[in-house]
Structure formats: C-alpha cells, structure tokens
Length: 125
Figure 1 (cartoon, one colour):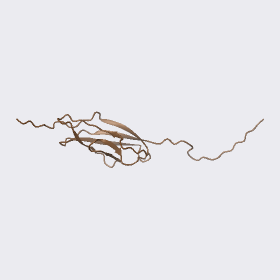
Figure 2 (spheres, rainbow, N blue to C red):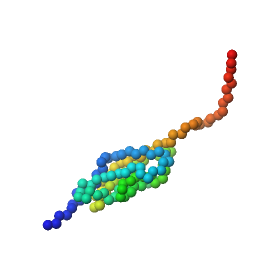
Figure 3 (cartoon, rainbow, N blue to C red):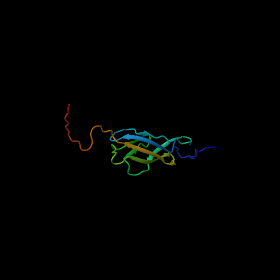
Figure 4 (cartoon, rainbow, N blue to C red):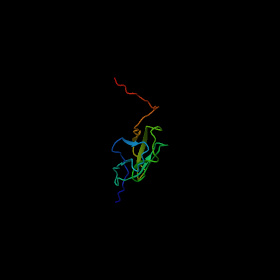
C-alpha cells in the first residue's frame, strides 16, 4: 500500500498585518523577515511574493527577507502598504499579509525659514 502526501493546506501567517518603520534615507538589508507556516507534511514554504506592483521593495523568495531597493524619501511617500503572499512547494498560496512601512522624516535641528540677523542695544538707567 502506498500513501501519497496530500497538499490540503495553504501556508498561513501568524498575523494578518504588521508594521515596520524606516527612517528616511536609511539603507537596510533586512527590514523585516516574514515567516509563514504550512500544516502539510513537509511544512515548507517555497516562495514569498509581493503582490503590490510598482513598490520600492523586494523580498527573498527563499528567506522572506523584505528590504527596500533604494533609500526611501519622506516627501515622496510617508508610508507604503504591501500585500505579500507565501506559496508552498505544490503551488498553494496563502491569504495576503498586509505590511505597512512607515517612513520617518529625519529630525532637522537648527533654524528654518527666513532667518535674518538682528541687533539689540542694551540700555542702562
């Protein structure tokens, strides 16, 4: 008697969404590592894919490491919403996980705007 493993379950995420924060201009190799599980025999997830098009991010098929492909600019966008799916080795896809990436504007110290020099005289009585 031969028993074949049946692919009954699609990969599942531990939560429906996550939030990541990145400072403007910061370059990182690992913004967040995503991990889905598969309840089938091998439990392997073979591919992670970003479904949202034209976003400045990439994800490693094998490891689930999400990172920006270039430094992000706060004035271009304050945040990004990505939809990511996990796929098992037999082709079943998970429900999408939403990833919100917030871009923090840098803290600029000092004067802003039109700064002019002012002189004051000290009066004594």
